[in-house]
Image (cartoon, rainbow, N blue to C red; front, side):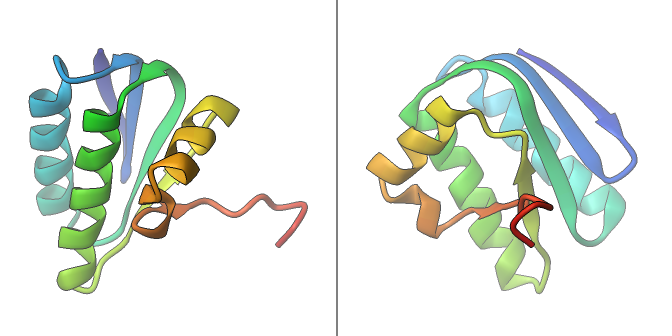
Length: 102
């Protein structure tokens, strides 16, 4: 898992699984603190994701909402979207709206 940033956008790439959740959780917390507001997490280059990783994103979204901020996921692949729906975590994360449907 590689973690980068571009302004308020946190960029994840590689395999996002139980082995990388600690690093991603820390990066999200640091990014929220650094930007003091809403952030975007770009996951278009995430090749594989597991339930533990999705729970990290959902928990971070809930924490951000409690402080009046938002975490928006962008670039979710069909596989990630399917896992979010199957696990019902789709209710806890905010996805970037497709401009074609906005």
